[in-house]
Length: 57
Image 1 (cartoon, one colour):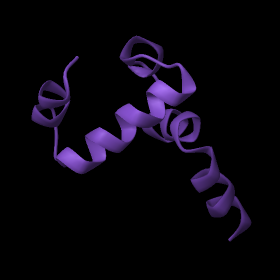
Image 2 (cartoon, helix red, strand yellow):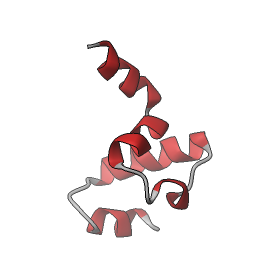
Image 3 (cartoon, helix red, strand yellow):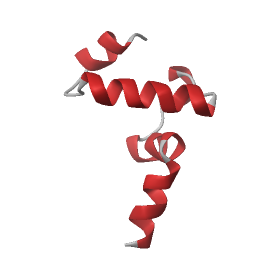
Image 4 (spheres, helix red, strand yellow):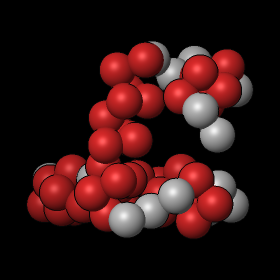
């Protein structure tokens, strides 16, 4: 799925799509790996440091 296609599915900014794509590349994940996951779980894989910060508060 392209960034444009992802942005067209909801209210997602170009910057957010870019950051998520870069995080997915770094983690070795594809859209198919996270497509059926709940958003919170997918975000935890893409941005683990943010999940740790949420858990600490």
